[in-house]
Amino acid sequence: MFTLTPVKLELDRVAGHFFGEFLWEDSWEGQWHRHYYGLHSEPVCWTQIGYACGYTSAFMGRQILYKETECTGMGNNNCRIVGKPIEEWPDAAEHAKYFSPESIVEQLIDLQTEVVQLRSTIGDRDQQRDDIRGVSPGFTAAFELLKQAAGSNITVLLLGETGVGKEVFARSLHDMGPRRDDPFVAVNCAAIPHDLVESELFGVEKGAFTGAQQTRPGRFERANGGTLFLDEIGDLPLAAQAKLLRVLQDGEVERLGDHKSRKINVRLVAATNAGLQNLVREGRFRSDLYYRLNAYQVRYRHCASASRTFRCWRNISWPSARPSTARNCAVSRIKPSAPYWHTCPGNIRNQNMVERGVILAPNSGQVEVNHLFLAHCDSSDQPREFNLA
Ligand SMILES: [Zn+2]
Image 1 (cartoon, rainbow, N blue to C red):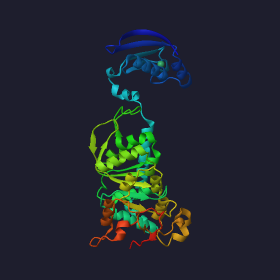
Image 2 (cartoon, rainbow, N blue to C red):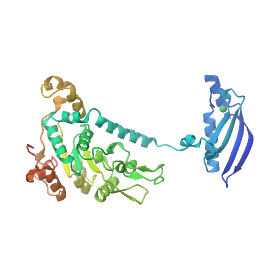
Image 3 (cartoon, rainbow, N blue to C red):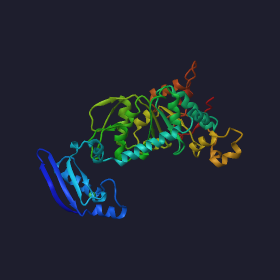
Image 4 (cartoon, rainbow, N blue to C red):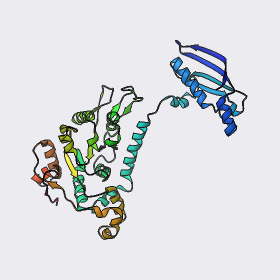
């Protein structure tokens, strides 16, 4: 790649001292850059200098940064490089970032979260809530249930097919409650690789496992004071389920590789397609976690795409526009639906049942049996329709 001549070399591995100055004659990279692109205002031999930095850093056991002080790509006759420990360069901070590996997976997950959160905030939120009303009796009923739970801290389980805009529901719940000015953090459990989901949720200390390159707070910590929305919770691996249960029970989170517990105050909203009870039966979802999450169930269905529906109904008024415009935006596929209630198998946690009843009962009224059982049980049992009004 070049003909190398040492100009000055001082090194002491034990003391960590290094200074090296070398002449590069006939730099391959410099010559070809010049051939293709002409002269440049800055040194151009990036590949070669990368080798030098990497090799010397490994050899010395500390970060050694080389810079080209002359370069054929800049019009000099030869290239000249100087290397020393990165801290000894005045602009060390600017270069240090090139030495720290970045996890592309973490970046992707962060971006993904951002997309979910932004999607849930598109447009005016109040307008969005108005849009939910009147779209279909099923949505209205689900939304009324949400509204009644908004002021409390009860864990809400949203049941609906994939793609029905559950994050919009979760966001609405958050925005209607006292935590509205605190963070709303959304996580799609299905989109995070299984071996990363625990560090994403609960945080990680640097070095907790291979690849844990930096300390990161988890989503629970980031949602502190606000709402954490766990979408597709049925995809959570069993190990993470066990840890999630502990966090919910203790109100404390422990980062991976850390022994310190941190108090957290997070309102949890979980969502899944309706098969969670099947997963429990198959042993793929912990029943104790299921009952804890299932404190307050809101089910909605009969809609191909709620988010499309929201957008559609934002611009048209119900009901006059329904027959003509519905066909273009999937609204025609919405059928009226109502929450159901029916006899429960009896294994529900009483605490959840009572909490739900208190929330649903009218202000000055009594907790009726329908407040206790409303929309709780799995639809595999024979449902009896219940009129919310
Ligand atoms: Zn060069």
